[in-house]
Image (cartoon, rainbow, N blue to C red; front, side, top):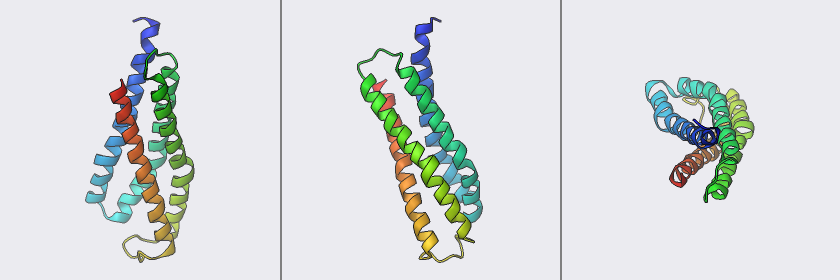
Length: 149
């Protein structure tokens, strides 16, 4: 294999791993956990997995962006913009939203017994909605990148 063939292959692999990981986590793992365990236990498990999940996305995105620089393509600029947006969303999720949500979870003894109008639950719900929307945007960006391949 020639060295010039490496960036497109690694780029495709990085995008596939990012999109596949996000889709697996969002549409299979998380729903399965919440169906299999009570809300508090499932939330604790997902909370433990989130930091690694976000770092995985960031690593895949950085690798893809670096590889994209070595690829000649008409869609390179559009792809770079999409990856940059996806990385920005993932960074906000990893370094802003997730730490705030984790701190809020410590203030909520149980999601099963704490009233839904409790201020910490209200703020947690807002952060969760923002994060979920961001996650869907990252998946949508990944789909767009696959189409642009």
